[in-house]
Amino acid sequence: MKKLFLALGLTCALSASAQDFNGYIVKLKPGYESFVNTTYADAQMRKLSFGTFAVVKEKFEGLVADPAVEYVEKNWIINLNDFSAPQSVESALTENRDEQFSKQWGLLNDGRNSGGWFSRGKAGEDINATQAWNVETGNRDLVVAVIDTGVDYTHSDLKANTWKNEGEIAGNGIDDDGNGFVDDVYGYDFANKDADPMDGHSHGTHCAGVIGARHNGTGIMGVMANVKIMSIKFLSDSGSGETIDAISSIDYAVANGAKILSNSWGGGEYSEALKESIENARDKGVLFVAAAGNSRSDNDVRSTYPANYEVENVISVGAMDGKGNRSSFSNYGQETVHVFAPGSNILSTVPGERYKKMSGTSMATPMVSGVLGLLLSKEDQLSFSEIKERIYKTAVPNATLITKAKSGRIEAYRLLNNIQN
Image (cartoon, rainbow, N blue to C red; front, side, top):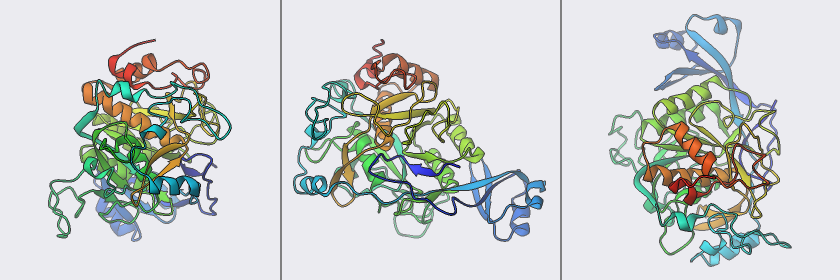
């Protein structure tokens, strides 16, 4: 049985757990909500836009056969050990935060800023962000949800591009906009069941910076200069979470106007509830960008979820290094991974006005989310099939990647201008 994971690379490790699920997710048939409340006293109810769910502690024959129940499945746990970047990297960046763009090889690779200790990278193996910005820099009305460990929405490189729920009044204890959540000004924390999605881990803030760190002359630059980043937390500060909270997060993002969902997490067994939440996003016209995973495996042979769900709005992302090769940790799949993007040694924001380099398909995923945000800012009427075809036909057919995905390396300028191979 596979464990669930955050899509970080070699700098982190999975935390083995004796219990890899926490109770069972029960989908209820319409009209049976009150019946379940009285029959199963320990049930925790979740009313979502695409159905009503309960989480119960035990699965038993009577539950499965209950006429109120549509299906029962495990409530998977996501669990990750803490990881830390090399101290020398963090200290240097903490002392000097201005104009860090030269270190962002994923946006502009000059060969020197993308290599390791003993070797250079390959110039031009990037998303070609600088040329793309001559065409499109984003849209202040486009909402991209980062579904993760939360986001430090006070970070100086992020706060100007942070989504705020204008219909909610902070701190008054009232659901002012009637969306079912009290005081959800910056999003919601499904891990702790409160309205403050502040990141105490760093993973979500890093992903947010890749997408939309403000182009303000200090710090780093996101793929999008203009965007609204919605902060949604379902992974705790220790990096753990549950499937029921993942689907609640997706439902919240869709209901509150997100057009792109960036998901740098995955793994575990197939979940019908999670697939249904993605299908609901599809039906509302929302893209679901997902990390392909970091187990060095072929997703064509062994599925990784949610990246492997065969739903039209899912875009699965693998990670590449500064030489244009598949990152050593990245999953791949000529039929199931759609595109590769920079994912090794990616510099971005972390809580506390700091910056770090991280590696993983976690980092490649928001890179693609940002590029697709540029595309939707320019052409907002594209269908899912049109978006995917545009990716396939404009991606650079890098010889080392073309056999590892349905396309090669995503290229923002070519994508925006529909320059085909």
